[in-house]
Length: 536
Length: 40
Image (cartoon, rainbow over all chains, first blue to last red; front, side):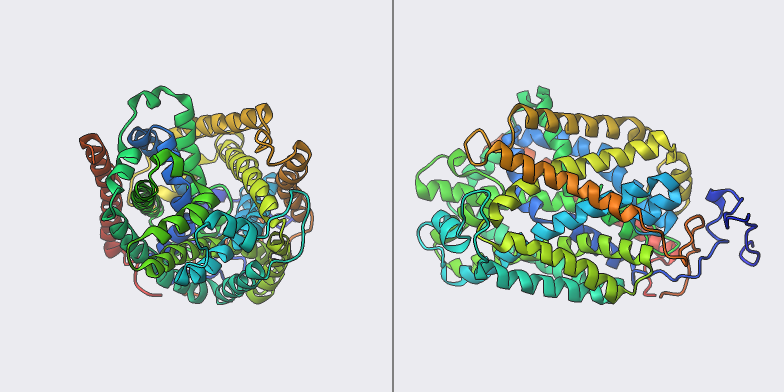
């Protein structure tokens, strides 16, 4: 009814109408890309959430924090932090129809930095995440004939990475560099294709293949001798752990890092949703899908570890580990011990890592591409070339012999003091400083299938910031008490300070640097373009 | 596998997969009503 008459503006070009009633009446003249269907959006959101951490982090975190009892705080964290944050970010992106910086700029003039800070975190994460996916790609080939031989640890560290002392770079490692360039080629090609023909189409292939491949692995793993011991180790509950605050901190940390919240991706993806989009329903589906995959990964990984422990004649706790060590040392050992079809299951495992990592990498880079497009009014191809070219160039650092040391420290600090801190700031700013939860609920509730009234605002106002604050303070306290990996002599304090704290500070510096330039004159920073029924 | 581990694993699967299927069913019913999932 109001669409025909443009809103009155003052001399600064600002509307003087209420900002929460203007969705239908303000069009800034720029069309925004659109998902082809709801399932396309969901597959992309789930693909972003399901990453390497689901496979190599969750199983060990659960095992190390009370086993089966960990699932209670984990579920509480999913319902009181993970899903509410997903709803928040979907609603922000859908309401303000922009990448994270544009969304926060439209929310409040001074909030733009928050969006660019998230983009800075994305760029740093993408630069090393691509390298880990490249390792997995190389290992998919190695798995065919078990190239790692009888000592996967020495193969990975010495033969493949050629690791040197922390602080030295060494030369490029062709075995890392070549797959890295291929990974960037695929990522940038997908992103150049756009939201529907690139990201959505890629995830329609990758996510089903990932789930089926991993399910086949799990079926094989649970039928191996010793699998029962592994499942016992993972699922036997240690109820005493529930009284340990560290277990709750671990559960909230796992949910937070696993769901791709707090770093611009979900806001960006939601900005491509149509007018009628089930925001809360989508958040529940993505949250439960991500956690279901984590549970599947836990079953597969610990069944396999049980088999490895039995065949090696050691206890489970001697083979149980996480991260790079689990994927590139322990799993190759386990694959070598399989009675048959070693190559096939090796390819399935590392192929799963590639698909899980690639779908997440695409989403991380898209968050930055979308932000640059919005601010400088660039074409998608130019933005992909600029953002992708810059990030790919930065990632070359990690393709050197010293890259693994940089990657290890940067990953730890960017996650703990980048993603977690910026996520906490986001919730505090929206819930407390700007007090925008009620208006956002009013936007989401009429189009959402799962009711938000009564639980969503109180949860995000009190529970989520409180627990994220505790997680962040705990991380900071641990780091100050014992700097990362210096106790065992792996790194020096100087190296950790320069690389780790330097990376966390760089993410913020990138955010500040990208906040300073003026927005392209075609971008309306005050009003929100109407949702169009016709796809762009 | 111990009974405690089986019970925990089963409950976790029921809650998470049940939550996923329930969310999909609620969303699908809503989508059909509103025509959200038609190709655009």
